[in-house]
Image (cartoon, rainbow, N blue to C red; front, side):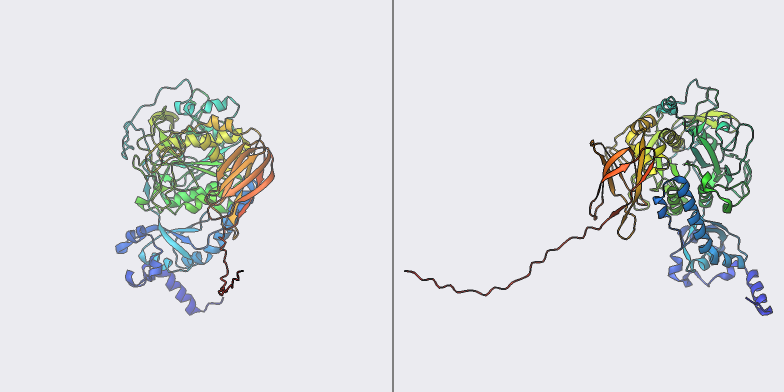
Length: 613
């Protein structure tokens, strides 16, 4: 394109215009369709000339459903990363050009096609008027109610901070580790070896004696943080500052949670569930304060890690973690939309990464699981037990999830979450910590143990959840709109990782696939049953993406699938190979009622004359 001097001058003048000059006159003058795209939090925080951080969500989002048909995590991870990256590169180009021409700073993401920036109401409405913009959501600063040492329990005020000295070094594994039966799995020779845990939190002291031997970046003599650490805090305070080139924790919380997942210093501090696993980390909070954008950035890093100081373009999905621990929340009460993280969580799941999250500390009210990511279907949500008992901690959030209208049952499972002792920065250990933040890493570590013991379950998320749910010590409850088990207080009950290992055949193979209707749309909640010749069977349901997975002993099976409104599916003689991923996609046909129409026939009366003798 050729520009003359008048064109060039016009472009320069446009670039120099203040952002407010992008505005149409008054709020009432904006088209209703544009206003409807903007979250109330954004409108509130850009009133009276104020500026706010917000997320621009693009209309074009990648469809990664085909990943469900791929056999393993490497293949799925590469496919998902490439599909998301390519869609974001093409779909965001017009918007990014528009922003660059006006000198507006931004940061773009691809795990969900989102652009994050700061501006006033004028910029918000100019963006909302664009056809390529789906919606504009807030990017609030979220002060997570992160547990520090807690000494009192009762209601939503269970984040009382109280100084408490470190407990004496124990002679055995921590009580929560023993209560969920991790040492019994260690005795079988399985400690989480071969599994990588990712943690996004307040950061980590990587060289803490309980964490250093298990950090993926440490080879025993040298350390490399490339692909193993990312800091999503780009303008921070606290002891870590911003863009820390090495793992750093400015709030103690992350070091404590990772200790419960993998910690063991080899000198008696057996604080972690899976000491044979490796870990990598991402800081998503600045002195305990995060944003939707920092959470998205960590999920993006885990999808395809890249070097310190590098860019997502260098991301390598082959180095993605197997399971992630997320002991934080993004509450709608502070401006975080329930939908903001949904696509990122779905895409993590599609890539074969299991996402474990804490239920939140807003109990004991029902429907208090109201923060993302705990409320989402694509995550495994963990409630907190009073340690050493099968009673729910008073602060543990309950279901059902009502904020998004789903009435979804949550939590999924429960684990010890009171008076937990673990690692803290400074190479120290501290007890007395309580919260669902402490419960979640018990489950994260249990996933690593299960996957090291039963490799066929690796990255088969639905089958893994099924194994943990079936093996849990079922705890009935009759409140919060549910009864028996599973329920909205304990989920399926207390984590029992030894039983999960025992109940999963050592020669298990994974049967998984995608359930769709005739139009190719995923069918959610379909019942799948696989029955062996000897009569043994296993059942599960398809998830929010239509994907299902079962752990089965090698053999021949009859598989059925049913869902309301669809005709039953049946296949016989299906061979399932041990120690392999066996794929079976299922298409359910819509059950169309058949109406029988009987033709109307008009008969004329017939006079019959009877003759007698």
